[in-house]
Amino acid sequence: GLLADEAEPVCLALGLEAATGPAFTRLCDQASDRGIRLSVAVGLIEAAADPSGFAALRNRLRLAGVGLVLGGVSPEALLLGALGGLDADLVMLGFSPLLAGGALPDQRLAQAIARIDPARLVLEGADSELALRWGIARGIAGFQGRHVEAMLAAGRMQACPQSGHCRLGQCAGRAQEVAVSGRDGCRRPDLLDRADGGV
Image (cartoon, rainbow, N blue to C red; front, side, top):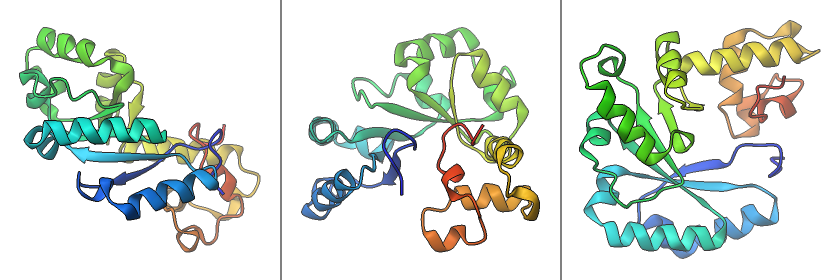
């Protein structure tokens, strides 16, 4: 199973209402009993529409040891300062060619990233080397996307003594599955949950 000191948190995309209900409380208890860390992702639009509800959820999750992720953040929203005092644990910034193409003012972007703290940013849509280079140059350490998944899969396959029967795409796909059935065929599923790709 997933152990808190070995694996990344399981992130659930929920609305404000779903994350405050009794079913979610039971899920938190079950995850805690099994050593699984949880985080909850809420979209920027919903959070901005109900900032007091978002703040109440943030406080409740912190008391329960559950992380809060703010999703759906565009480069434009970042520049507008739309995140205000939302104060999520992680912010999911969507990569856009506008970022790397110079269409947006780089100095203002750097200031906006510094206000949030690049350690709290995850660059979504990191599907190319360009996206990775842009994020790394700005101190961003968290990435999500096809390019990243392929790099992690390559690292796992290099470290895995059972990788001879696997293809890169299979390894990347299995690592994204939570259900055991989606990981069928992997002879070292313990490597799939490692944040370092198994190296």
